Length: 353
Ligand code: NAD
Ligand code: TYD
Image (cartoon, rainbow, N blue to C red; front, side, top):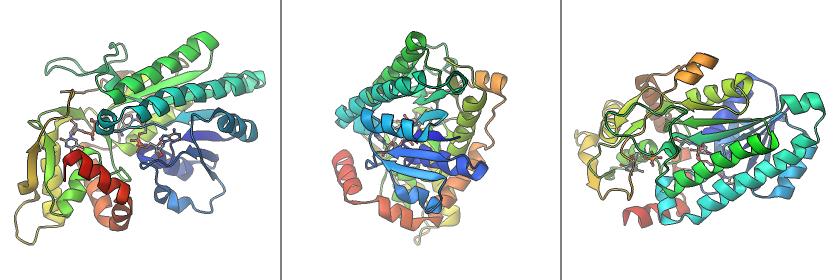
C-alpha cells in the first residue's frame, strides 16, 4: 500500500511525512511544486530511503497527477499543498486562487478518474483527505463559543476565501460524484520546519538577530495554537477512522494573544540565549501597522474528533513551544538556508525594510 501526499516539502507536510515513515513502512509519494515554502532540507533524513518517492510538480497538473496515480496506485491522497500565508495573499492573491482553488479542483478530478476505475474493494477503501484551516469560519468575538464543524463559512482574507472554496469543491466532489473525502480544519500550527514568515518562527529568528519583533495592531488578536506533530497525529486518525464525507475541527484548546506568544518566545530566548547587553528580547517588540481585514480571534472546538476518534493533543503549549524554540536554536543552518534572496525580498517588501 502507498499514500500520495501533496505539499510534503512544506511545514506541516514534511512533519507529516517524517512522522508517517517513523511509524510505518508504507511508502509515501510526495508531490510538491517546491515554491518558496517547499524545502527539501526538511526531508534530508529521508535521503536514499526507498519509502519516500519525491516528485517535483504541481497539483494543478492533471496529466502528471493522473500518471502518478496510475503508476503508484495509492490508497489515499492527503492534500497539504497550498499557498498558506495570509499576508502574501493580501499582496498577491493570484497564486492562492491558482493553487488553492484551481489546483485542488484538478487534483480532485484526477483523483475521481483514478478512483472510478478502481476495483470495488479498493474503491471502498480509498480516501481523499483535504487539509484545511479554521480561518474559513471567519473571526470570533471575545465571548463567542469556539468554531464547531457547524459554523458558517465566513472567510475574510484572500487566503481563507481560497481555502473555503477548496473545501466546498471537496464537499461537492463527495456529494455529486461519491468521492470518499475527509476534510480537516485546523487552528494555527507551530513547530519545527515552519518558514520564518509566520508569527512564531519570525519572532525567533528576528530576536536572535537582534531585529525588531513586528507585532500587528494592538497585539491582542487571538489564535488557538497547536503543536504541528499533534496536527499530524490528528490527520492520521482521521485518515484511519474518520467517517467519509465528514469534516473534523482540530485545535489545541490553547487560545493566546499574539503579544502573549511573543513574550513567551522572548522569555525562553532570554533563558537559553541571553543577549550580551542583558536586556530582554522583549525590548525588541515593535508595534506596526495592522494587517488589513485582520481576523480578531480564532478558536476551535475539537470535541468531535476527541469524542469520535479519541484524539487529544499530546503537547501542552508550554512543552510544544519549548521544543520549538530549542529546535530553531539547534538548527541555525536550516534558518540561514531558508533566508534566501527570495525571503529577504519578501521581508523587505512587506515590512518596508
Ligand atoms: P507551507 O506554505 O509551509 O507549505 C505548502 C507546501 O505546498 C510547500 O511545500 C509548497 O512548495 C507546496 N505547494 C504550493 N503550491 C503547490 C502546488 N501548486 N502544487 C504542489 N505543491 C505546492 O504550508 P503549511 O503551513 O505546511 O500548510 C499545509 C496545509 O495546511 C495548507 O493547506 C494550509 O492551508 C493548511 N493549514 C495550515 C496551518 C498552519 O498553521 N500552518 C493551519 C491549518 C491548516
Ligand atoms: P500568522 O503566523 O501569519 O498566521 P495567521 O495569520 O494564519 O493566523 O499570524 C499569526 C498572528 O500573528 C496573526 O494575528 C497575525 C500576527 N502577526 C504579527 O503580529 N506580526 C507578524 O509579523 C506576523 C507574521 C503575524
